[in-house]
Image (cartoon, rainbow, N blue to C red; front, side, top):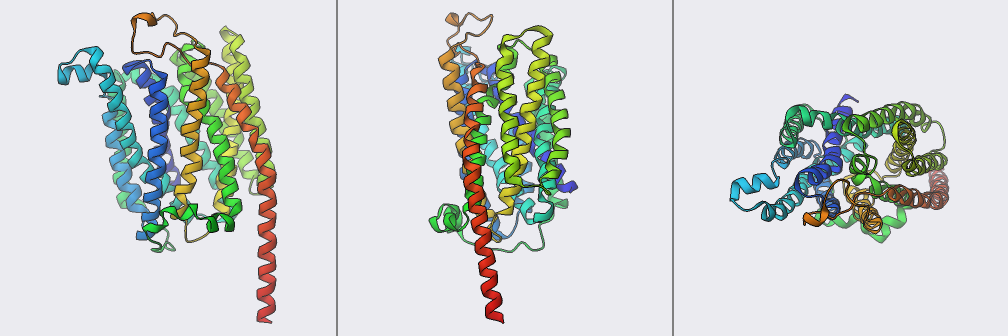
Amino acid sequence: MDDFVIVRVIGQIAWSVENMYFNTFVFDEVAKDLDAITLMVQLSGITATVVTLIAGTLSDKLGNRRAFMAWGYTIWGLTVALFGFLSPETIVTLFGVSLEQAVPVALTLVIVTDCIMTLFGSTANDASFNAWVTDNTKTEYRGSIEGVLSILPLIAMLIVAGGFGILKDLLGGYSTLFLALGIVISACGIAGIFFIKDSPSLQKSGTFKDILYGFKPGVIKGNTPFYLTLCVIGVYGIATQIFMPYLIIYMSTYLGFTVIEYSIVFGLAIVLGSALNLYLTKLSDKKDKLQMLYLAAGIFIVGLLGMYFAKDLSGIGLLVVFGLFGFVMISGNILITALCGSTLRDYTPEGVVGKLQGIRMVFSVLLPMVLGPMIGNAINAARNIPLPNVDTSADAMTTAYIPAPEIFLAAAITLLFVFALVPVLRKQVEKQKSKAVESLEKETENVA
């Protein structure tokens, strides 16, 4: 359990930095350009999916998750450490170009470096860690394990969204902050070389042809509950990515929160949400997980609607109401993540765990990170809310608009599709159970 927690929390801090603070770094230090941020998120999602398809299959073929995790984390940290030095000022110093020329170069380097970072991060975390957890857990306690693991990303978000803003100022800027984080991630990887162990039951299996294993019609037909669970993951993932890449920028620009204020809002929401879900996710091992998905989606939607309508408030009322519904939103997010994660592991066929990590990434990363930001930024552009206190006519390197509150409303509407998918998933689960019982009865008759 300690291995799960340590590896997960370091990985999630790194992903939270990419998902939240790399975006704010671009907005604050490179160019106030939401289009560039959207493109960076989308290309990162594509990279993560392709890499996981390859690395997941290779980890099965070699019968080794440990090496991919340890060395992946080590190099991952090096790329994170480099990120903060990719500002236009650095380009000006190194190449002697004008600041106007340096901005597009810096944007290009930031996007490319983010993809390189994702390459090693996905190898370590998405392809290897997720398969490693499945290898080392059993169905009867996966709900509890998944509950703990699903809370850790929120704790990482708390550290990143609140603590990193304050820490950035204390350390003197993004470059020192990312350097320090990169050292921690690499240190985790180096430690993993010596301490992480693969499951004794893990065996070498498959070939590179298995990269497309999860896309085969026969595999899909034979594991329908697995793929329908992926569809649910895709829906709530898209909903989350509609607003999440722009959340800190929205709070600091549209709502006018200071670093301290949004740190308090995030902190209370995440701590309370995590505490509530420790109880709720334990229930998932005793209750009907599919039935609880309705509850999770409903909580998520209520939180998003509250965050949307909080836009009409101001002062302490805004902080309290936005924080309250932020807690509700985060509670729903944690719960639906945990329920889908444990359900997916329950219906993952044995012996092909690594081969299926790529198809999981299509639904959990590729589709959400391509479609979600596309929807969110289309809304931002349509609303065209001007950047406060900036003369955009004199600044060529800005999209001249900030995130709009309607991104929360769009996310809530997207989540309604969960209520259409769950009944179909339940029907297929019952059908699969019925087939299993019939098969067992036939085997018993044959033996008799």
